[in-house]
Length: 344
Image 1 (cartoon, rainbow, N blue to C red):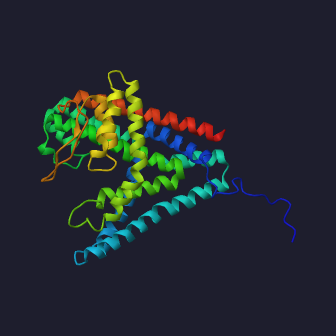
Image 2 (image 1 turned 180 degrees about the vertical axis):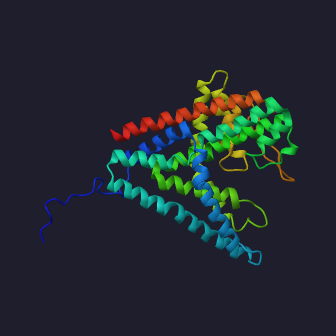
Image 3 (image 1 turned 60 degrees about the vertical axis):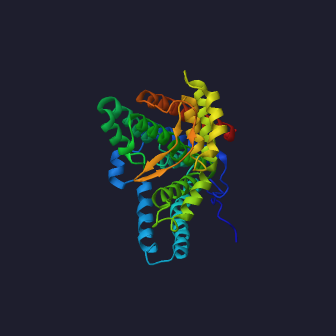
């Protein structure tokens, strides 16, 4: 049968053949949009946030598949199943949407739209706002206000923290969440586009909710914790690099000290990933981070990152924020450069 003379392939003929010329511009646009606007409060009030959606699904699966009557082996199996459901629920719709937009819209229209959607997933702006609130609390309201602000971003018991402890906790949170909340979504968006970033955020949310060694979640959250460790490996190392490079640009920071701390201390952290950004931040600022901490009523013994001062201040916290902003700018510049090369 003869084909109609007017028939033509869609403007993007093979949606499965995703290349860096597609994913890197999506990522660059997402980082620029999020840095400029964050996630608007009005949008959150209207539809909440993808992390909230993922959290609601995780909570429902936890209630249904993690009953106290089940054995540890059954809970672990159910946790693997719950993680599979979550990953599919996050990545498949995003992948289908991305393929459809690239197939049926001109490239120059599809990429900005995908970037706008992906901009909901990194947390550059909100991370800075939450950490800056701790510095402002210490400056304006002293220790009580600092404890109140830091309790919103860390899991440790704020009542056990003095002012130096509050400042260190906020700096550690800044370093670790730079990796988990900014660099890791960027890595997976750069590799797979929107579904990669959605998949990462879903797994990371699961780890934050059920990936704990508690009687309820040690078995059920085992798969989420292990997968989160795995998919954060590249980002944690890259985050350390961004911080070392930023230290070379920030007056008073010590890039050589950051490099030494990473080489000496990163692998001594109880987390396979958190030690890399925390050691880089500590070495760059001449501080000691991590070390023994109290979560709830449980004291956790951990190695120190860096060999500088333990007596951190609100001023050190502001220096950490300047280092963070420079590191975000370096990441954006690298992504833009790679996107230009990919577009050739």
